[in-house]
Amino acid sequence: MPRRRCWCHEWPGPPHAPGLDVLAWREDELVVIAGKNHPLSRESFAPLEILAEADWIMREPGSGTREVFEQAFSACFGHIRIALELGHTEAVKKAVEAGMGVGFLSRLAVQRELENGWLVEIKTPLDLNRPLAILLPQGAVRTRLLGAFLENLAG
Image (tube, rainbow, N blue to C red; front, side, top):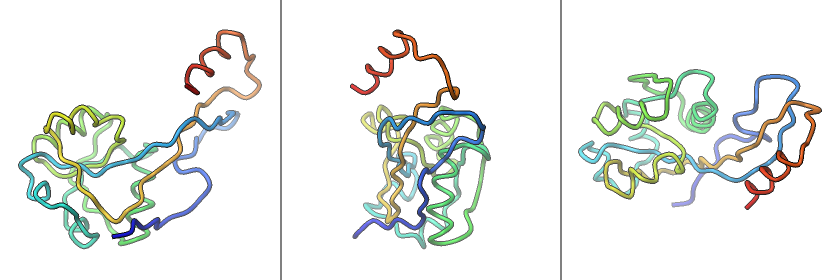
């Protein structure tokens, strides 16, 4: 099934503070996750109608990860059933692993848990790709050390 991009704007999860230089860094993908014993973990694909009935473990309001998910999900379907809001990625992972609901986090943040089978990725029709950026104070002095760091990040 083709993935749907249900929202569109130039920079998902933009910085909310003025006076920042935004440097494009790399692409990231949010993935929908469930604990290995959650009923959705047995599904190879979860349509929006099933996702709409799920209890969601969410990052706190203002989180860039949450903003990207809310824009994608709400534009496609509407209301999200929030079971729990947590202020840290590790807390979300542990609550999902414990079966308290389903969640969504960066693939980079859950790769170890997926590889070990502690969490299960749930395929969805949502396109949850987003760009990641490096934020620097506007007009910051670009020292050789900062230049070397940025070059290292570019890979």
